[in-house]
Image (cartoon, rainbow, N blue to C red; front, side):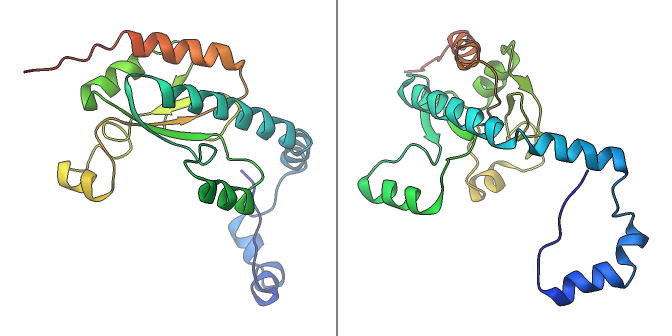
Length: 185
């Protein structure tokens, strides 16, 4: 792992000159530094591709009959939202959240039927990952706590990677097709 420290010069100098970096092991090995430099050289290309894929997937999810709502900055609903989006960012990111119409059990079923997209809570890499907060990251929350946190039982988080977008969509679509909505009258 690597990172940066940002802040006022007093903070930077404290870390740099008072030995804090040495005490915490905050110095990369030469090989780790090389790996960071290597991946930074393709960062823009990877981000561009992931964002392009995410825009396509988000737009298709928005039109899907089994999806209640899609949360993605690249899908604006008004001219005002579009202006705000353009002022705040160059790319909308590769994270999509969406609500399934069939709740908790449906969310689990969709995720269990995926073949390409990996079920994992780690997000933001070059491969697409998906998770169901109600049964994974927030599984210790009761129904009221989930509601208070605005996490529906059908909410799914999807981190889009750089794979071929049609493969990603085909995987999502086949998993959604396998999930049946049962309506009790």
